[in-house]
Image 1 (cartoon, rainbow, N blue to C red):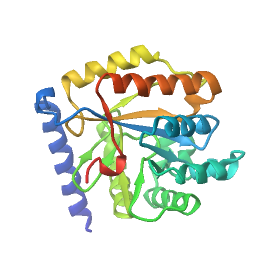
Image 2: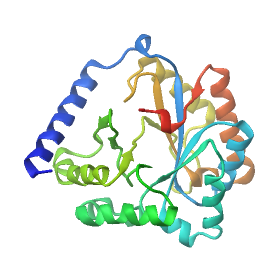
Image 3: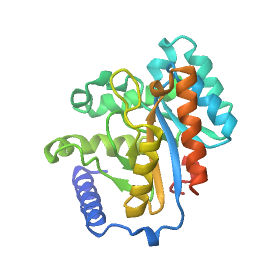
Image 4: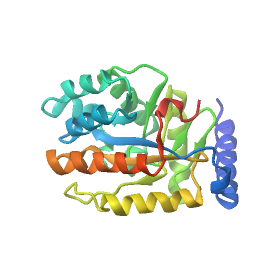
Length: 256
């Protein structure tokens, strides 16, 4: 694809997304109330607790894993194998290096970004088309859905959007998120479960998601590293969402 085609394609996507933000989607237009549970950065302490709760509650989830953690975290390969053995769990690619947490430097080299994602595929044992999430960027690149990360400024986006395009061209379905269960530097959840539930109810009242009636919830494995509190928080969240009438979606059906 020529440079001009990339520019035109990226501009059109940004324009269409801007129109989406202006028009919004009312809750009455939503076909359902579906939540997609997603967890980033595993395998880490906390991954085993997540998998245990997912099995017990029999809910689908996507675990976007980091190749480096598979190779360096004690028991990392076993956790990867355990996740892949659970039918309702989708193991996704979250890069090999996680950008070494230096995102601007990471996205300054497009070829290196693509190579890093492909390296993670090898470690994770994934083949195209791969469900993936870029490190540090709330970006969607799906056959029928596209969204830019509005937390970065326009100049930064102009430097990075070609990275997103070429990663997608390399065989990746890229997922961002609609809302995050935030954690502090020590890995503790910032919102209580009750607070998070209230925020989710409020957001569904407005219904302004990338896909009508569908919320992708971002969490991180390290939030659940405490065997008792970690499992209890996640279990309580899942059960309370069910009681409120929410359904849990498989990321593989998010944008078929």
